[in-house]
Image (cartoon, rainbow, N blue to C red; front, side, top):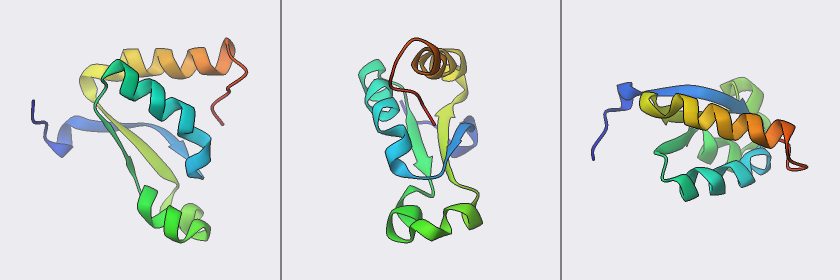
Length: 83
């Protein structure tokens, strides 16, 4: 299914790519549509992260509850805490 970019919202912001490595795997496993805005720029120029406002996890609006639940479970029931 094709989605429009306007259907995606920011649900979390990270400073560096290593902070969301496990989250990315979980999103893929669940088949959730997502992308990380500013990921490439921060990968090339890590010191730009603060200037760009970080790396934004964008998800489709229909997945808000599911993604929030995944993030909450990582932060409370796991030693793999999301920063």
